[in-house]
Amino acid sequence: MREQSPQPNRAFSARTQGHFRWAQISTLIRTFSCFFKPKITCKVLTHKIDIMTQSELAQELKKCVKCGACMAVCPIYRQTGREEMVARGKLNLIEIISRNQELPDAWIEAVDNCLLCCSCEENCSKGVKITEIIAAARIRQTAAQGLNPLKKGAFALLKNRILSIARFIKLGSLLQWLLWRRLPRHSGLIRRLPLPGTDEKTVIPILPRRNLDDILKKRKPDPDLPPVLFFPGCATRYLQPQMGLDLIYVLEKLGFNAVVPAEFKCCGMVTWGAGDAVSNLKLKASNLKVFAANAAIKTVVTGCASCGHALKEYDNLPPESEILDISEFLFRHREKLEKLLKGRQSRKKITYHDPCHLRKGQGITKEPRWLLKLIAGENFVEMSHPERCCGAGGTFGLTHKELSRKILKEKTDAADATGAEIVTSGCPGCILQLTEGAVVADSKWLTKHPLSLLAGLLRSRN
Ligand code: SF4
Ligand code: SF4
Image (cartoon, rainbow, N blue to C red; front, side, top):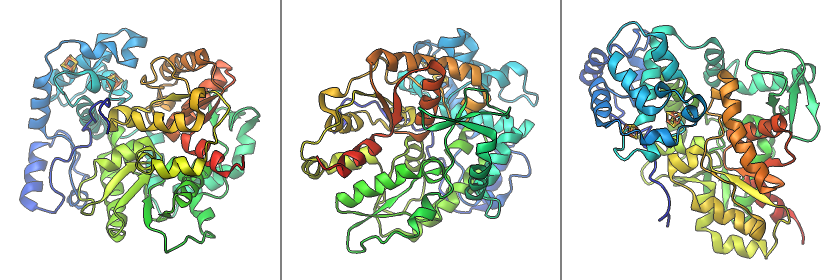
């Protein structure tokens, strides 16, 4: 069904089975001691270890033949022109210094300056697991230097039940009118007071007082409809609940009952990318409990490219469980959806940005384009290089603002050149980054998830 699609990246591949084995754990601790601090206890190792072992790392590094094919596609290299910033250079540095106790600044800079966008992996004929190597190097860096305090605070919110991300966002929604002024044309706010990681053009979404879980408390789903498990992800749940409601609405129109357990936590992608192995393992363990409790529901959908990429690599999902991006799910039900739309189409010109974690992470390119052609017909136009990263890269846009903006400019220029009124993407993180790009470039287009456009059409009467 996806004959043109690139091969999915295996960055989250499982390394070991997930059950508690003392012999295995003690061997792992001995072997990879350079990757772990003692505080990473056996308690968190009881679930699974999916970071590279030292010997796997050495083997993976050996696969690189230094051909330089990764140079043509790396957004960081395109902007900096520095050999140590491209995969070949990074792997070289990691290989040379992988057993040193001290991490030189050049090593840290190379490991730090990566979007984990998988572009190099998609272009690597030797199939080197580049992002997995870089993530393993970041775990080592975190073990040696500790986590950036901002990330540490943010990840604590993802795990803490008392000071939870939900409560933090609610507090933020009360304060944001003080800290940001409203940006009329775009769905966001612009900084009024200096804050870390932001400048005067940083767009913060308008923080909702009621998150998706709050809104869904009053929902009365039809228990007779076949259930589908919906994993909303943090951005949809706490920042863009309307997108979650749109997805639920579309599922219901198609005759499915969306089950949305409030116990789901962050998928763990952001913690993996930051080298926080402990948080990553804890979040996955929590989510796997929720999957196990809902094991009777075999189909899981998400509208977030990064969540889908992360979940598809979880070990120990219930048997026969299937994680699908919403575009894949809709493509399977295309006949019914086409009937429901009854020829209704958007009259707006629409273009599309491929999220890295959808295109390169999961190999999904055809289904979103099918959906957008259904939504907009001839009004759907491709931008040049839709596959290029937008520069968001999890927290990269916050920690490397200048470089991220340069990469983003390539994307906003490509979107501008299409003359589109709406730029779509299947990832809430990309949507946020593109919204900021429109502000920085003073572009006229709006940003939307394809699902929200579809829900709008289904709700319309003509
Ligand atoms: S494309 Fe792959 S094999 Fe070639 S230099 Fe880059 S990482 Fe090495
Ligand atoms: S993952 Fe992306 S940013 Fe990182 S080295 Fe590869 S192409 Fe460059």
